[in-house]
Image 1: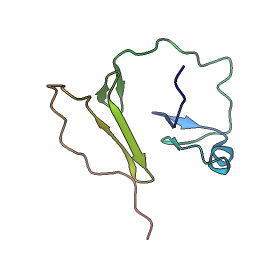
Image 2 (image 1 turned 90 degrees about the horizontal axis):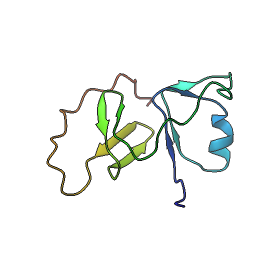
Image 3 (image 1 turned 120 degrees about the vertical axis):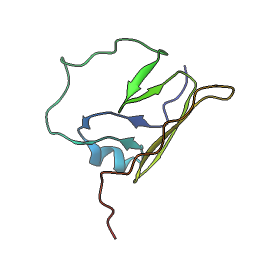
Image 4 (image 1 turned 90 degrees about the vertical axis):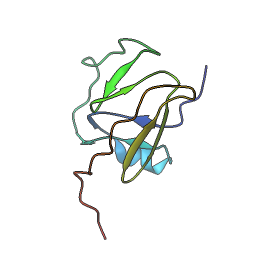
Amino acid sequence: MKAVSAVVVDGAVRDLDDCIDVRFPVYARGTVVATARGRIMEEATNVIIQFAGVQVRPGDVVMGDRSGIVIIPRKGSTRRSPKPRASTKKRSR
């Protein structure tokens, strides 16, 4: 079993402060107070998914910081990356 080094969610998460306290990286569109327990379940593992309109395959590299995330196709892929889109998030100065 591999360790999980971060979580990327194309939606909202809860308990973000707890994740920050234990230095566990979580990247999400926002936060919510309601639990997903009983409403969310894993459908599949190691399959191709769409994430924010971008195709992500098993083995792709996902990197992130406070500005957002980037998905890098796995080595040897012939896929072309889409043109970068301008962030909709305002930067704090």
